[in-house]
Length: 454
Image 1 (cartoon, rainbow, N blue to C red):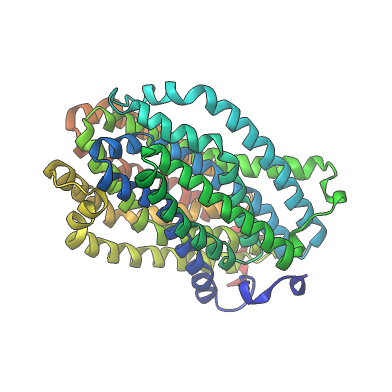
Image 2 (image 1 turned 180 degrees about the vertical axis):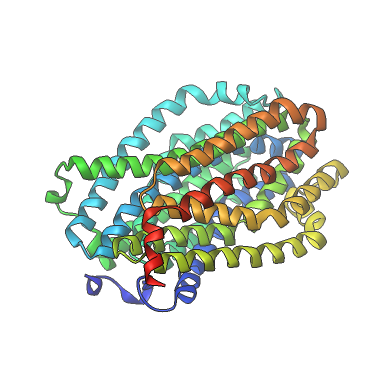
């Protein structure tokens, strides 16, 4: 089966040195995350420097909804790809094609449902988040444009997911680099030349993402024909569709619950004034950048564990998890030192603001969160590994813990301690989530079956 794909762009995760193969696979994912984030960050930089703090706050106020959709799209794509990766690891070519066909069908149904639903709930949702009256119309203009074309977001994540499932993390990066550079050009055109405001940034994002989707389609058709299903592979298979729907929706809803918690937290932040919103928006953009090495490793773990689960290699999975944990601790240490010295300058660079409230709050957030990233790294890798070995409920429990924790912070602590409570909210919750996930993973029967191999 492996001769049917382009081996120059595929990493063998089933054999050979574990850490080396994981790093080689993760590096393109890291670069992909950087360029993915450039979509929204360039919007932030251009809007902050050209349209001012009010427009920046308008986009920031809708960021929780954007993250909710992006997280759900990424979760669905990764969840569906788990079954594809498992089929690849077991060498079952027929099931591989059937899983891709099922991914297309399930993805189309979910996309249509979300497009229709968001037409009715966006504006009320922004009001529910306590979005200030002076920026709510701009926030709606931005996010409504994104959601109208949510099919583009889902299509890219689905294509990228199935390519990564067979060990190819390079080509999704190539396509993303091209579209990210295009996004910068379109941002400047729509925002500065056409004076479309924050809505222009949304239009630029959609058009640039559409280019990456087209490039993915072309590549799969020409270089990864193994992934192209025939008509017979679309035949209804109750067990397969049930498994893939459960897997995709499990990861999608997991991301959705996490980002719903973020949206609830945003409602607490929105009540602290537009300068606090602007500072937090800039800090979160930077946080998303420093999170990228951890996201890349957690995505790598998802594919690695899925393939090796299909191949029946629990000992290899255990070794990979220990490598991932050590990687997270090392990267967290580097980020902590970087934020200690560079946080204020980076916040100013992103926001374009000289307001002390914006700069001080943003820098304080980054300096507190950076040392806690090692915990978040363990959390994300363990959660993805549980999903990859077939667990659907346990990862959702961790997301519910996060949601409940953020609700409690918004109701009880933010009104009293203001932005300081916002800063400590997530690190405290991560500790509880990580404990639940780590215990669940290392007690899993399949993982424990590796004991006899040592």
